[in-house]
Each structure stands twice: as structure tokens, then as C-alpha cells.
Length: 389
Figure 1 (tube, rainbow, N blue to C red):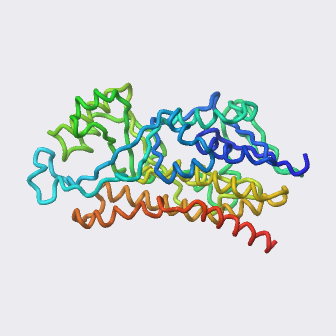
Figure 2: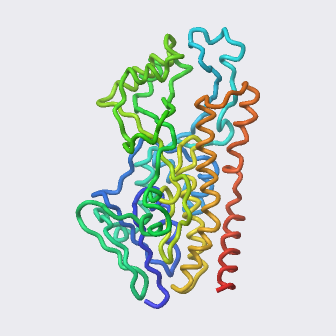
Figure 3: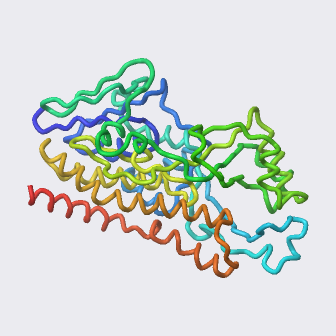
């Protein structure tokens, strides 16, 4: 095959599909996407695509706007942060700052919201059918003369790419994501039903709470009771928000709360010719809405590096350059998102103006990434590594 690269992507979710599209147009690359589930699918209701995430996606797919539109993407209006802080909703006008608008999130950023499974469907559509391989459960990654042999079997998944990369480098428990200290619960209900229960002003809400001792359980999914919800929203009881949210959340079979998990830190994203990207590399909490955006950025950088190497011997250097560039940015987002959640959940005792000054700039470093400059930096790092070797 000469200098043809065979690239195996383990995991056929949004990150894997984005990477496959970024690599598919490179002549020397043959892409194979392996998914452990019987079909390619995504769990969860929706994902937000910030303006910079949409711009990044447009560098992978020239028809990215059509892709998002076909997936049913809709503009996401501003999310408003209002200070209530331990004051019952019925008394919201009595406190000195209760009801104060801290600021509007994404009011001018043209964020889109799209169903996860629908977006995945559209990202997979341009890929050759022969490149997509569902029901492939990874069992081992073994090096050989030309690269790696990847073994699959039908059965329990007991091996991950992350384990392969970090084994022997960090403690076993650091191979995996761990609780970030929050939980959330969501439910998809008809639009008009939500409006009728919550009112015109408050028809789109998410319930989140602090996990007082997240280390006590490794179960990410736990039953959610009405008593738990009433306790979490105790200072809002008596008004339309708390009662309405409890009603909507409980209006589903077996409501659950989900612990928000993250990778606290990862010492490396690469080992030889194997690398991590997307959530496998940098799982993060949702407070700054950047998980998918980071995965798309990963895909662009990897696609740029692979388009600028011409032999198998250069893959190690390309992955090293990717790791040096992407790992610090992704870890910064993980840490910033966790801190943002602490602020939004009232763990920081500040007045409205102080909160406004603290929160408003937190998204700047995420949104202001210059992708062209980022790609040039990746190539600079690649050349530096090649010159030193």
C-alpha cells in the first residue's frame, strides 16, 4: 500500500464521526470507524453548538450549515442568569438583589441546539458505508511491524483505548472519569406542555444540584425522587418554577439523576501511534457547553497534521504535536467548566455585580480561538519535533 495510512477510529459517536470526516478527504488515509453498539447512535437529548463550534465544523464539512439544518438544529436564544439565592420565589421581590439579572448567556453568539442522534446521523451520511463497522467491541490493541493489530469480539467490553495509553503511566483509577461534584436531571416534554406548566416566561429549564460527597458512589445514574427534587428546590417552593419543574421531571417512567463526570487531568493523550480525542481524552461538565466543540477542534487539528505527513514513520510526531497543542486547552476548559458550575450553583458568595464580572469573561478563551492560527501552531510543533528527531 506504499504510504497509505489505515486509521482506525474506536467509537462511532459525534467525536469519531467528526474525525472520520476530517480524515476522509486526505488521499493517503483510509478510515475505518468501529462502534461497540449494534448501531451507530448517541445517548442524550440535545447538544449545543456555539458559534466557534459551528465555524470549526465548517472546516470539516463545507456543507456544515446544511448538516445542522438537516439534523433539525434550531437557534438557541439567550439563557438568563438571575440571582435568587435562598429566597423563596414568592418573596423574590423582597430581597435587595433577588431577581437581579446577572447576565444573558450567548445572547449574541448565535448558538444552535440540535438533537444528538440526529446530528450523528448527518455526520455519518457523507462517509462510505464500507468504512462504518458497528457491533465491534474492542478487546486488545497489539503492536506489530506495520503499526497495530486491533482485536474485537462479541461480548463484554473490557478494554479501552484510554487504558492502552495510560496503563503503566498513572494509577488505574486515573484511567477513568470521576465525579465532578454535580448532578443533573432532564426530561424531554412537548413544547406547549412545558409552556403551559411553567408559563410563557419560564418554559425551558434544567434541574442541577451539588453532590455533597461525590466520592461515595461510582454509580453515575441514580433514581431521582420527588423528595430529592423538593429538597434541591426548597428555597423556590411555592412558585411556578419549582412546582412546575418537579411536575415535568417526574412525568416520565423512572426519573433518574445523572452525576456529572470529568477527567481531572490526563498526563498524555498519546502513546506511539495511538491517541485519544473527544470525551475519551477530556470528558468535561456541561456548564460551558464545550464538549462537542472540543471534539470538533481535535478532529480539525488531527486532520491538519495527517494532511501534512507522508510516511508512517511521521505519525508518532504528528500525535505528539497534537498532544502538546490540544491537552492544555482541553484541560483548561475542564477546570473552567467545573469552576463555572460552582459559581452558578451558589458556591461563591458574591453580589450580582461581582458575579457579573466573574462570569461574563469566562467564555472568552473558548469562543475566541482562532482556528487558522491553531492549525498553524500544530504544524509548527510538528516541524519542531521532526527537526529534533
